[in-house]
Image (cartoon, rainbow, N blue to C red):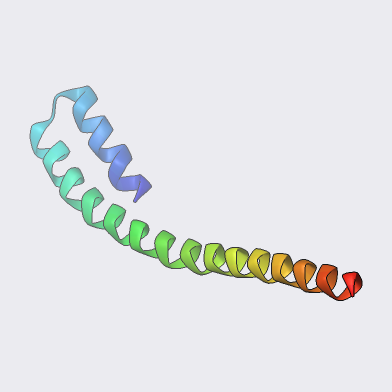
Length: 69
């Protein structure tokens, strides 16, 4: 992905349209794959964090109510 981006920027800097076009067509699909992999990696961690915090709050509420009796 980074090699394709570097080639695209080199093509922009040198004014090479064909090199820029070729690098862009290589970069965009790789960026899409990276986005999918990043989403698959981050989403379960966020769900786990959310569920853990919900459980901890529910546990504190339950402990608080048992101490009031």
